[in-house]
Amino acid sequence: MKINVLFSPLFADELYFTGRTSVVIDVLRASSTIVTALTNGAREIIPVGTVEFAVKVSGGMFGGQTLLGGERNTKKIEGFALGNSPLEYTPEVVNNKSIVFFTTNGSKAIVKAKFSTNLYVCSFLNLPSITNKIAGMNQDVVIICSGRANNFSLEDSVCAGRLVAELLKLNENAELTETASAAVSLNKSYGKTISKMLAQTEHGKLLLENGFADDVKYCSKYGTLEAVPAFNSGVIKLL
Image 1 (cartoon, rainbow, N blue to C red):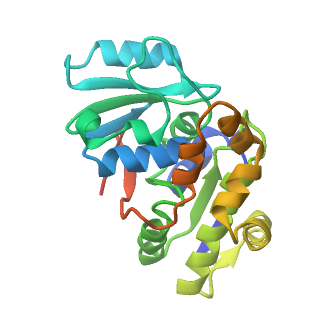
Image 2 (cartoon, helix red, strand yellow):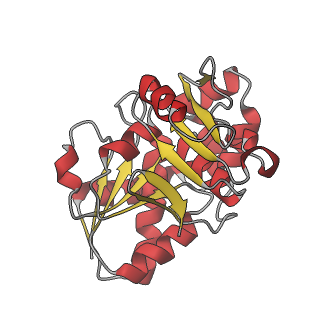
């Protein structure tokens, strides 16, 4: 197994992911929200790359069973039913619903990697379950940090490093790229207390300033959900 980490999807061509096993991470907050929504009974998540496409896709789907969810620069988009807070995606709201989902970073990264043969969504919440899934496949894997505005994101990189470290526990012979090794080092330096790390990141501070302290606290929980969200034919569902 060879493990690679992309600290941003910006410079990767869509075709790079063809035939690969990929994992997308957007800790604050898209991947945490996707994992939560599916755990709480959402039928599927349909990630999109633009707000306009989100509206277009939702308009052609069965009324009443589809919700528009997501954000732009942390704020819920006008006309959308839901934002990007995982705490909004309760069983009462999302059960048996299809959710068309746009976010500033996470949904774009998933769409970018859509040609992957296997594509999974990871957060701290479900990292152990993703670890077990990837380790059991024993294939090369590329871990994609969604980043922030196409730039480096500490929280995504630390999460990627934790995933690599956990994979190494199950496969000590795995080969790491330089970026994967760097991610492991970041996890060692910053990952001891996830909640503290998230609160000190640029994105974490922005969320705290905008009243999303409960989201930051929730996204810091480790291994509380067993979901393995997998992208296939344009939608994300639980395996």
